[in-house]
Image (cartoon, rainbow, N blue to C red; front, side, top):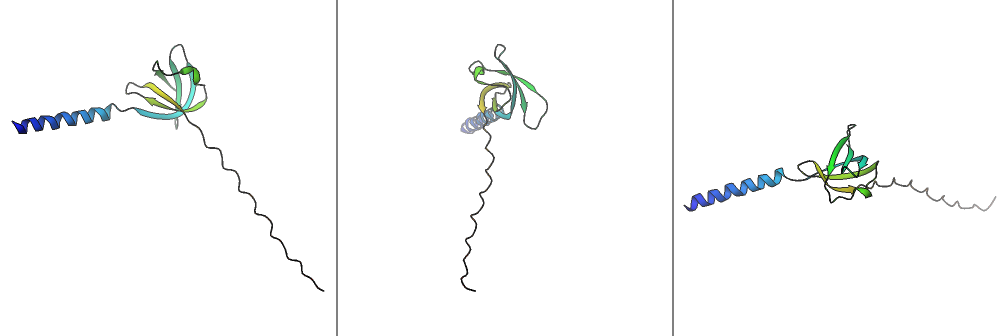
Length: 111
């Protein structure tokens, strides 16, 4: 009886771990192409793609703060609904290195 209970527990545990792995949220980076506040949808172009995709946005996400042509990272639910929008800030290009100061030359006396 104990073996059956332990086996059943292990089976249920394995199923719960598999379900959590399947239902995990995924993140996608790219550019927001358009925002439709009334419909609760955004048009998004993922990085490395030229195809725009339309995603439905959950009600708690503030679409009024989102602007078109911004780089963003979307957190998607398993149903491909936007759960969260994170702004992506690009690092500023590095400033060119300063030129070293010219060396001082010694004056030669004589002649």
